[in-house]
Length: 248
Picture (tube, helix red, strand yellow):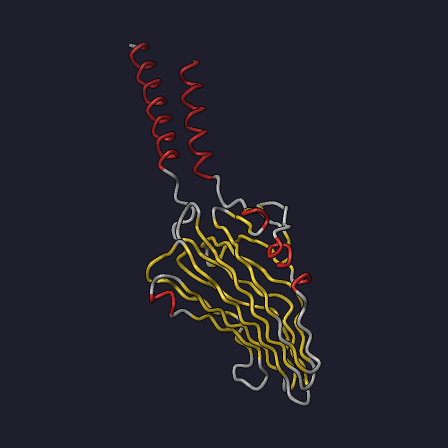
């Protein structure tokens, strides 16, 4: 009886370890906190200048606003960033969500630039990049977000994600873009250019921007998990064998 209980315990532990994963540090913070090194919330890393989520570290943040006319570029203290995890097309991802409220009225423009590094500390490498935003453009209003990526490989350096919202463009809304890397990588520097502008009528706004990273074979069990499951199966088989021998 004791051997049977022990075998089941080992098997359950192994299966439980396999199913764990995808837990995320869902924490809100601002770019200003990260730049100043004063972020102390969940997942804080590098002395408060970064955050780590599921083995991915986001750090080295910078934010540059540029406004003309009646445009409004939120100061860095009001740009809230949330680390998030989820599923796209059945594949798990990790990423960042930027909330602020960029706005450009008539005859104005807003051009802000956000940059940060993303590094895989543990687990699968980055294989796909995804970008989308929520916003409204009316009349002569136009809003777009362009993401550029740099890395040691030429293939990554050529990547550009671009989404826009412009009533004068057919189709008028293209707010989602994705790309797949030929070779998954463990590090990227992401540059996010947020641009809004209008003519003499209308307005443009962006309320939130999402930059997500799909990781290759995200939930493949680690070798230790396989070892635990194998040990449990062996122990269960041995217990069954002993019972048959004793019954003979």
